[in-house]
Each structure stands twice: as C-alpha cells, then as structure tokens.
Length: 108
Image (cartoon, rainbow, N blue to C red):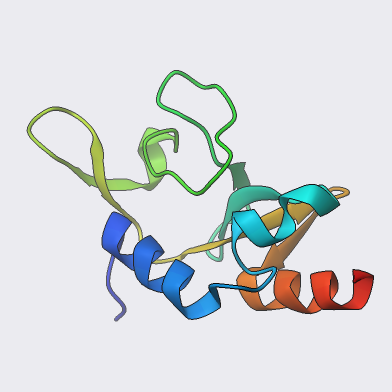
C-alpha cells in the first residue's frame, strides 16, 4: 500500500517538477488550474482554500471530508487518501504533473 498524501508530499513533487509546467507557476499562464484526481472514484477536485475559494496552487484544506485521512489539532487537513494524484485541469481534462509539463513544453 502507498502512503497518504500530505503537504510534504506536495512539496517534494513541486521540487521534482521545479522549472517545468508540472508546477502551478510554470503552467498558470496557459490556463491550468491545480487539482487532484482520485484514482479510486475518478473524481476530480479543484484545489481550494478551506473557505471554498479557488487556490492558485495545490492545497489539501479545501478537499472534501470523504478524501481526508487526518487533520491536525487545529482542524487543518494533515493527509488525504493515497489514491489522490496531484495535477491540473485544463479545458475540463485532468493532467498529471508530468502530462502538464509536456503540454506546456508543446505550447511554448
């Protein structure tokens, strides 16, 4: 079994894709929106702040309770289920970080 996804997981992913279209800074200008795909249910969740407003980068706090595995003592999301994959939505389609990086490279 894999591990639950945490803020540290997202930081590692950002580091791996730094300087590419696999991070929000590298693809925002092309219209990509940060999102999560649930491989178990095929649901896509746009990244949101806890108050429901769209977030310009990947955040766990705005995800629905059904994907939350744990919260910290202040109620913020600490981890989400392992079936979630961070990526982006463009024109209604989900892209993994790798796919987004390739798409941005094509568009440049």
